[in-house]
Amino acid sequence: MIEPAGTIKIFVRKPLLPAIIISKNELIPCTDMQTLVVGLMKAEPEGLHIHVVDSAGAEFWFVPEQRILAPGFTFRKWTKIRLINLVNGSSNTKRLGVRCSTKGLSNRRFAGVMELMIALLISPAGRENEGRR
Image (cartoon, rainbow, N blue to C red; front, top):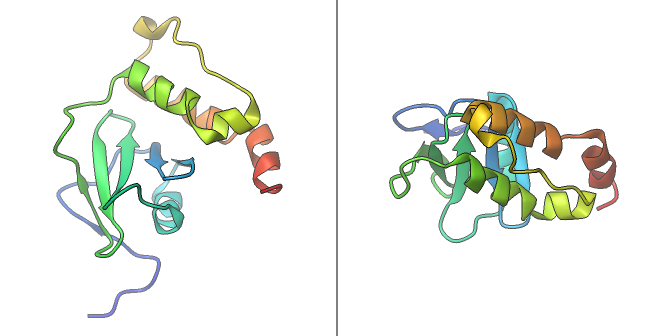
């Protein structure tokens, strides 16, 4: 069976969007399934698979050779502080010269923190810098 180049197989369930793809060189924000598929196709794996964190804090693994996206099995759930530390330590925010504060986390749900991180990653300054690479 031949599949179109821009398709992936999803095992068990889809990630809740928005989500962040953790690529070898950068974080890729995804707001819908189309940007998720495109991001997975262009992401570089760190090891055998590419990690994706969804807005519920669940981790997914994408295996590029088989183009399969499935829930990960090592971590239970991502925490808000772990997500913020990931974004703050990424090449995206270093390039932009911005950081997200960890204050006031107890007042936000994980999905709200994810939306803030997505907004930071797709800010106008981030898009301007994307054209310069």
